[in-house]
Image 1 (cartoon, helix red, strand yellow):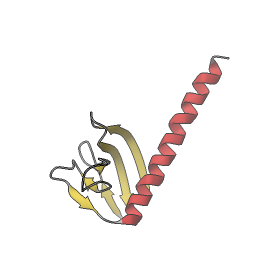
Image 2: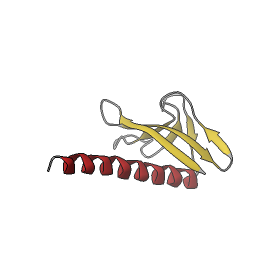
Image 3: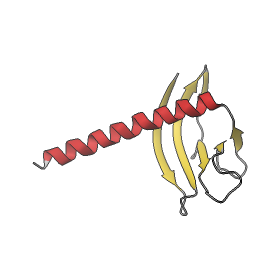
Image 4: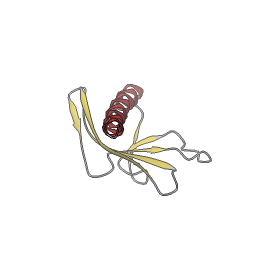
Length: 94
């Protein structure tokens, strides 16, 4: 199993998180046009916390909690890598 996070972004109103990634999970490869996964973060919405393959509107609902945790771990690794790069850049200024 592996994941390559390409990009993480939010919608203009910060209600949706979009994850662009290449994922191999339990022998299946997940890749598509942007976004691969959308996560609903709208505090007032009934669908808050739901994950979708593709955009929320018309996307396929993701219910596999192990898959979600796998993606979250991939995002954590991705952000650690980006923070490490930022730290190296800051240290180069000293």
